[in-house]
Length: 503
Image (cartoon, rainbow, N blue to C red; front, top):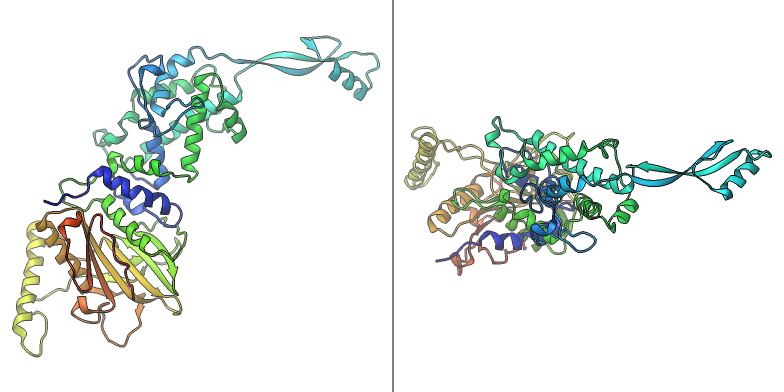
């Protein structure tokens, strides 16, 4: 029997596309919004920050030595300190109580000027210059080097900024938690739940007598200061600098393939093993595979804030392409624009005793009409099925860039099913055909053709219609090998998708 891709393989294949496209020319906000119903995740960077806080191992209470943890690069997301030692946020936090006990202020020399007295060591070179500059012929002024004990150092600034950053991230998680009951709090961030040991340690560290002189919210470390502390002999500061540097890298958009793999491996991305719904990760994989087929196209940066379904946009060959996921058929280009209806997919309603009209022989279409009507009725009334507007997994529009008004040339619709079971695959196949048959041209879009039809497909035979192409992407190549259908591409995991609109 065919096997669908396991989680590790799916992560491996999707990660390289995630690095190539997301944050540059594509958005996966819609996927992030659907990851966990209990948490609002505003963007990829935010999820990366949550992943950052979960690096490493908290270990047992009272930990005093890093060697006790036996960490590897996998647990710490590849983060290492200046000596190549793996370090993650959780193990760094676990060692803080022990390390902060021996924290001492740094003694530095500061230059002070005194009149008629000497304190500390006299800097005669500066003293002579000052006397000349001020006309002190009596020699009463002295520039002295005075010992100054201070915690306001680059090392401690790095430490405080890291701790304040950690605190800011887990407090944002609290604000974005949408549940009413703490028992609903997701397990994938349990290390940082309210009252958890990691939180208590961070809060206590920021209240340490040597660090509370800092304004944690305003402390700022320059890149030069950070680079200097990365080589510090004290592991407390060296590790803090390594973690802060990595945090700045991932939040600065420098996403590496290993980061993407670890991110997609989080429990929140785990495919739905019971096959009831299409796993978002599998949809993401096929979306990137389709985008990748347009090799010579110029993808453009998009701002998808507030437009979760909009994944990517690009141009090529005088055409404009818009790609959506779970699309309801409308689009809002900017926050200031009105929402525009491009495509509407709704099933027709059939009053009692009516069905498809036919001038020739009404009986076959009459039976089809009743079949559709009662299928909808059973699904809606017995199984709470929403028979209203339909949302295809993938919708790709090709628009004419030379037209003054938004003009549709072709529409590609696809369904994604992370399954190899033939019963499930048959069910989704019917749904895909329904989308293609009943997709209508929206009120804010026109289609350039002579045929007078409200549907995108000018031919009732949707497969034969030149305006619509269909795709069906399933869990294994073996499930659909040797399947060739006119107007519909059927592909399994591991297959290369066909280029839509390859005319």
